[in-house]
Length: 161
Image (cartoon, rainbow, N blue to C red):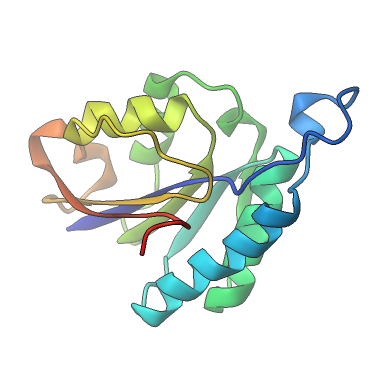
């Protein structure tokens, strides 16, 4: 069985309208939400085997905060290819995760994450900033994941009570 956590980056800053989208950091709410959501994962005992993250500044900061709070001891894999990516390419990237890893975090952006969640499990809610969608796949290899063996497990987000 493989478990995927689709995580949208925390709330980003729009304070400098002249900055490139890739270089936008987190705003105050984002800096508060990321550790709060990480603590929720930690309280549930969720520790991934691998974290893949977009290398855009807001995703990178979100990934670093989550990794620190949950005690992830490995190196987070930051990839430019996870920024502004087609959902089919994102799916291909996930399918290439090493099979020794059973639990993966993918930290990125919308609308790609929304489309991926819709493709996998028909999830049609908007994944809000710092939202975490958990999907379980009934298979032994990442290369075998798809809608036919995907199951919704949970969806958590900062304002959920």
